[in-house]
Image 1 (cartoon, rainbow, N blue to C red):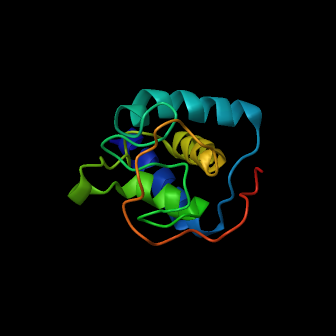
Image 2: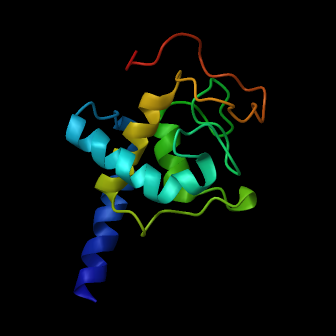
Length: 131
């Protein structure tokens, strides 16, 4: 029980500070994020994030918001109506930050044969902070 209480407190602390999070630029963190993405996200988004069952994560059309904090929230909460799992409690806060940071670096890349945009809500124009 004590371990579960510590875990719940850690997740609650992480989630209460989401609005102030910034993507990591640390290569070790981004490498871990890429590993996690390939393991957990690629089955729906493709290893190059061009989209399969899940949407293309490289273009400027984002269904649930295009900024880093939106990405974190989407990973935590999932999108059950679209079949995306909720990763809260599966991935720890550091893993969520790592995969979110890695995904953030993919915007503006051009994978071959990407899935077309699924909505018309376009992200703000201009390069990401990583370009």
